[in-house]
Image (cartoon, rainbow, N blue to C red; front, top):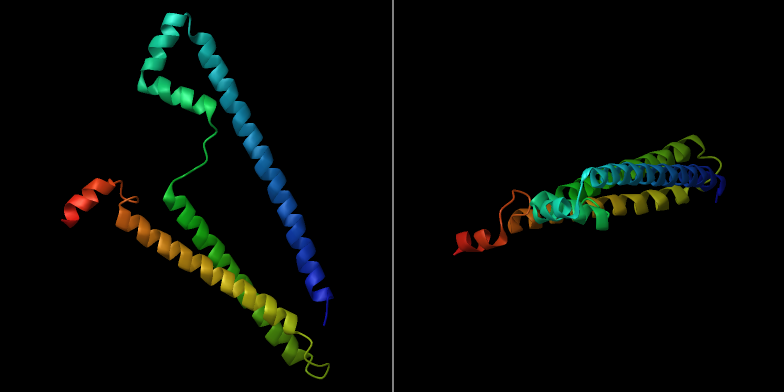
Length: 163
């Protein structure tokens, strides 16, 4: 088996993951810094405890306090479904690339022997993961549509219409 065929893609994958992790951490840090600066300036502009209390009684004030205490992650189902579709497409394309390389090397170096099974194995694993992500996205989409999450309907109105 040609372990060299795995070392180069693994090294590039590791380097890409490290860069992605660093950039994502930097973006998160910057976003928190900007949010903190904005919230500090807003609190500085509120003159008295009475003004602060009146502000906190409003819907905007409650949202402001919620943003101060909890860092929000996106929880919209559309984003999760789209992310699963993106990952699935990338993995299916990656698997087709590995399987194409396996076919190319087998045709080009047929006299050397058939030591390119690793490309078939990695391609099959990537293909099954990609198809799994696409099936997961389809199931999530269908469930979200059924529950009325995607179009803003409440579950109670869905049940009322079903009766």
